Length: 228
Image (tube, rainbow, N blue to C red; front, side, top):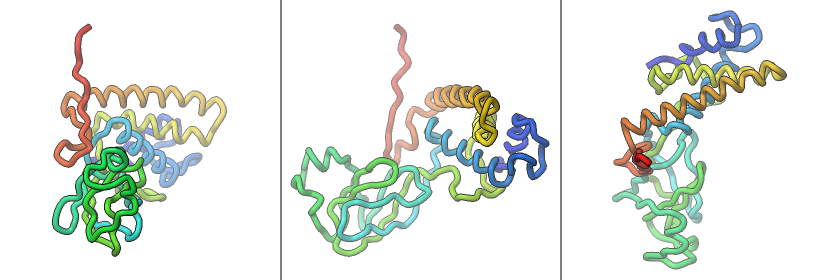
């Protein structure tokens, strides 16, 4: 796989700046790399690939059902408890279906977490709440890169056909510094980026109709192509 700096030469060429230097107008080490990181994360959100499953220990906070997703994880796909899997539900299941609990499930307290439900991009709920902190293993989709100051050794998880779209988005991101007509002109590159992301989504859907991973949850099947 390529490193993040491998696309920056093409970005500088699009910006009509001298290639391979520290940068005269844009700082290659900070501004351009930061733009490339945003391009990687944006592509993951649009295409839903690659499936970078990461697992890490997590401590369930006691006395509350509301928990915060650990930093660097886009979404949770599975939670493994002390002795068994913690079953995934939705907030609708917890609030309305009430299969084995009452409408005041937020007040339930137990010895171990038995269920969990996703809430947006940065929180999830557990049921029942625990009296003491409980250690579990969380598996989920990791962001391609994290950190306020990216370094040159960050690996690009996408294959080569994505690179053209990534350097277009990075160049658009960098043009914000110029503003005016130069920034307005860069929206053509943003539009091209979105078109390429759409094309890559179609291609990836044909290769694998399940976004993220069928085995670990977060299952979403695409609609079959039909003739009218």
